[in-house]
Length: 244
Length: 307
Image (cartoon, rainbow over all chains, first blue to last red; front, side, top):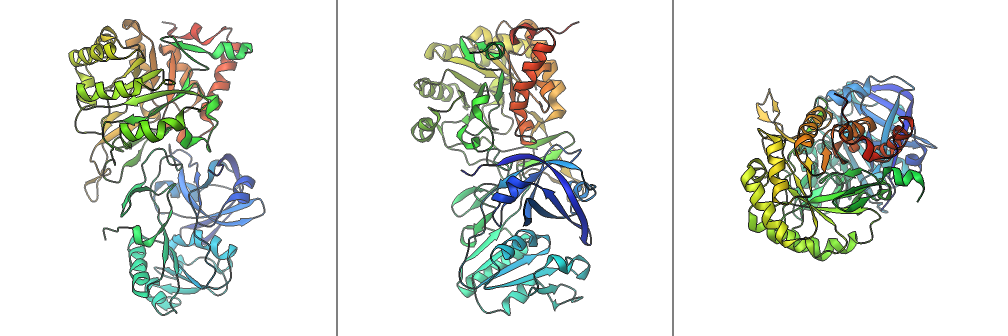
């Protein structure tokens, strides 16, 4: 088992990188030195009882970057925190995306881009990176995106007009790594099946512990119940069942 | 052993614990699951997940929902069943550097008898916690826990078949907790564990759907801590056996509060999800609390509410 660190970490930098979306840098040496692309941290959320699971989006020396979008009460609190706020943080948690040597496609839907940014940074070669948002307001600041990223917006306000799965279909077939909303992931799995390529998708869930003991994030798969926090968050597409 | 170790040591029905800080059933897995998160040798002990006769996959998702100062869960006693537990898991527990209390849950007297017989054969386990109060399974559990006669009769039968220490974990959702505790004690329980989660529910007002797949669940967290304090305080006055306090501890001070209310040991549950260092911080806090307030050991503060 990999050691998990429960540390208190200061927000060193926070900036708005898209509508409702903040990039936060934390001083977190133990996590920065050990995290793998796809892994997450459980982050204290002031005034809330439970921590929030958030994917690590970037590593720079002893710092990690989290990209947080306001979607519920917890993320609303987190995105409003000021620089120098200290938060308890446990990590790195969960498994990681597999390293694929040949060509691959990274498919990101919305804030699901976070773990794939770290992947693209660690394994920059031989990949197409596609990233979709509802509209251009939600697209991350380009300083946070790799140069060759292909963008789609549902309303066509920037890049390819349509969803990120439609954009993916225009690419040469290759194994897929994906993170995003469930309907998108269900479609990614269909694409992988049509192309006859492997796909690995990262799921999210509400979590209480984040380290495998509470069984709160269990999902049913073709191999029985699996815990998103420790069996995942990255799963091979073929074992997942989506009720969409 | 130095003085500090002596000071924190407690005894429950002849079983010695290095300190009174234990992890509650369902929050510590089987102990080895959390070895990469905290140093379990610093704990007084852990209570395993509840073991049932057959394997259980658990309830439909979602299984958790956060509420003000707490959380709902409807996990549903996920566990591999007693036979796989004995065959595959018990060998992994033998060398854990802390006391292991095995939690069991049955749907009938016969099921409890089967479970207690099988767990009694494990030599390094000294205590069995009887889950008489899980709100998340349809039968058994909480139905036993609410009726003083069935609690007495069950404990009496189990007492005859085991020499292990028996802890009866009771629900807070009863009319008279002391009466229930006395029934358990009269039947032969060695200790009472109080409290399990409180039955609770949350609804999304826009979809009008329940927040939990199982519709209702159990409330834990700081919200229920004062309930636990009151239950421990009430029952400790009338029950002649030790009480293990459980409920919403999320700061070291909360543990001390339960001990003062009447608990001989305290279990931490969902509170350490918010800070995995909490159990160890609590042991340190308790040590300095005793020194700073002139107490020689933990026993000196148990049940000492200054009325």
